[in-house]
Image (cartoon, rainbow, N blue to C red; front, side, top):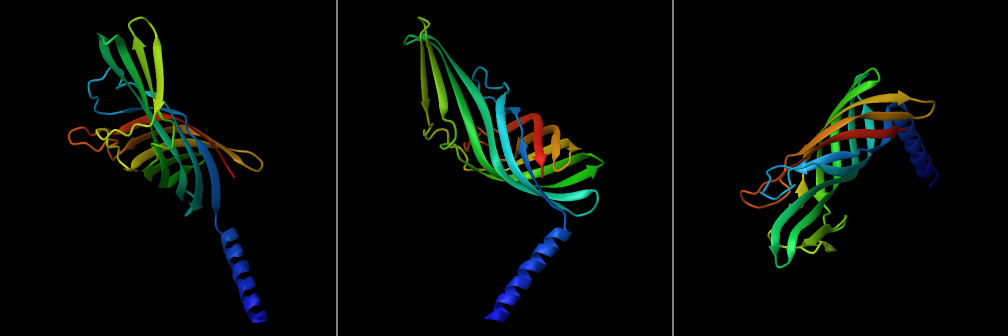
Length: 217
């Protein structure tokens, strides 16, 4: 029994010493950005960019002085707006529909460090949580000026949202070192390789760009 405990203790100590000898850091990132969907389907306002969010917790493993491997887990939100002009049909002037696309995402990438600056290309693998995140918001504007606001989860078959997503990211950042932590600031662009909607001849991919902020422990 004592030998087993000694073996376990030595194993744990060896793992801790090995981990300390390697450079493994963690960071928390928040990226406010603007996104849209490609392949506009003829609706008004659909091709415009709208405010979106990203939140990640990441680990970074140093390979050399200049190269590191990054991996993480987080939340990605993209938005779109569709305006349907009815011009008085059944008393409705137009309908605005705000749609949120929400994903839990695991990005992996390679980070190239140049002094305090870095370049970080990544590819992500994610799952659609459309019905868990913010619902679809629809505003119907009547001809008399009255507005009817509805919020719902869009379960209609014609949409057929893809369950999986695979975006690529490119981040250009700078690290500001403090006493115990480092602040991260940069620019990030991204594009989904998989279509958001699973319909023939109706492929749409989200694309976005914005800021990246964070703290590295």
